[in-house]
Length: 133
Image (cartoon, rainbow, N blue to C red; front, side, top):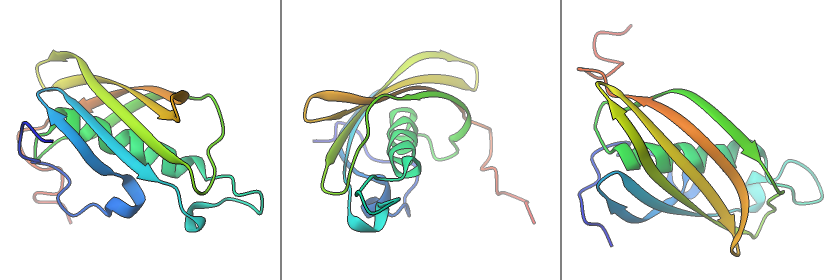
């Protein structure tokens, strides 16, 4: 259940990036069911971009500001994920200084870690697309 209203990434495709399960101040839990369209090869291996996308979305929700953007990430893919797996991302803001937020994200598959990352998020005064051409 959400303790807070979702304020960011309103138009994201949740079938590709995950469904928010929990949202609290500085934290989020997001779940993604991997499907056949996410396969990288005949073995069913899911492309890492979808796993990263889940982690990124969880980090954005942990910050939960309309202007939040990703500035940097340091990640580790620890185990493979395949079509049919259900992944759960837990994100927690670990520091905030000015406009910068650091968010730790861990993704689990059936209780086993498959991904860990540290995301550097920035909250600019205005949306990055404001005035962009």
